[in-house]
Image (cartoon, rainbow, N blue to C red; front, side):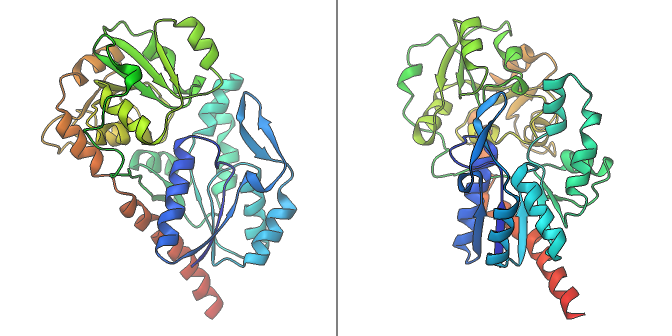
Length: 354
């Protein structure tokens, strides 16, 4: 297939969406498909207010349409609901080209946090954007059910994976975490209000709290929590070493659609402590026995009392966590992605033949 992938999130951003898209492009091209990217790097950009590291394309409509017309894709995948996403959507609708979309980020919840308005005020925008998508790709069954409840009945599974050659037990401990008081409680991700880091950093638990990542709240949290170890962003082997050096991975977010860092941490043998909300429920499971409740041993703990979840996660078997994390495969996730796009492209061919 000739696939145009249009996204407002791309390098140099460091987040789960970019890692998912970049890995998927590698997987798809390795299977012989041709992919054209439309990203902010091809436009003049401006910083998203409050997130200067996130650059959005300025007035991308005409160039996006020229690029799509020249490439003549069989199918367009629109990854984000930003300026590039809207421009690509408009071209597809005007030219009768089918597109799939993805729901990576809970924008209604994030916008509500920033504005003080109800998330319900922002859902009509999401419905309009995705309504004519052939398939809205989502990472978990609970998110699919939520979208169906909002009228997006074409929600389709697209899970996530880990790089098993990188994320596995046995890495040399990270020097920056050596000799710290145990247990080491680790969080990895964007340092921003929607990640709910305050719930983790305020938790009354023994040990050392460690935060890996950058973001708009980093300076504020460093000043407020001087006893927390803030390491900034890590990637590759350094990130895997951090996972292997810790005792529990703490995931306090209540708004993530999946939480790629959870399965990376588990693949390194690190049990997860989190709230019993969408994302953790789909990965760790309400009883810590996986989303279906069928794992032989708990791989983490979910509780509305985060300190209790941390305490319970400390008792979980690291080998069980590693086995569960390793079960998430990018190959299987790419199968789901291509199946959804293939169905949309096939429907177009059948329509043309008729």
